[in-house]
Image (cartoon, rainbow, N blue to C red; front, side, top):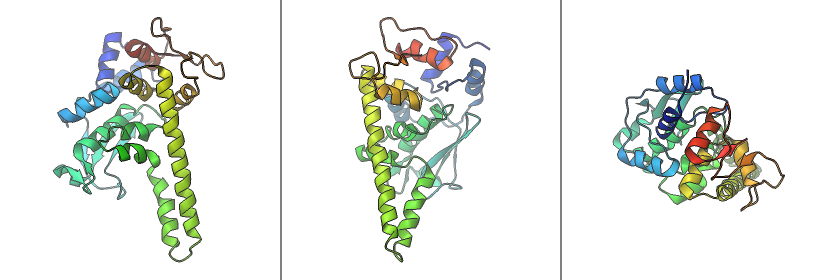
Length: 263
């Protein structure tokens, strides 16, 4: 099964992004299998196109509160690198949850996760998803929780602190570690975007399609230089004559759509 350049670019624009090491056959089967019956609003489509250069045509959405933690408005269920379903809270049928999240914003957030369903990369996943938020504070602070379970140690230690005050130190240390990681990763993404030497929209589109290690490596690149500080030839950034990648669908997409090559 062969994926032509035209087909690859069209699927990319629809939110189907090849994952690291994903073959053409696996990619095309995944694209054909993900058929949804829920169509995103025009705001969601235009917002995602402006942010990350893709517009999802549809998603397999259903409404249920089962398995969601109280602070979760939605979740994407991924099975075998494929989006099985997108779960939204029942409250979102009327448009908002807790008065903080509206349905379109959550839909855009989960659509980013869906687009990266073939990536097993967790470091920057929430950073990309929270970029869809309309609130600046949420774009900045939202990614502090990488996985849902990370909230529980803080809540448990804060609760136990009512009886044993020493547990408040655990809460403080846990939150401090979270903020340290948050600041460090925001800086890494910022440096990686600057190192690309592209406009904000194109930089976001490229970063969304990179692995965690590729982003970290790019963040270590000296701004204005084509070579990383450690002199590795990991990245080649020559827009006028980009190197043509061989045998990797994701790298082929980066070359075709954005003139960016990873070796």
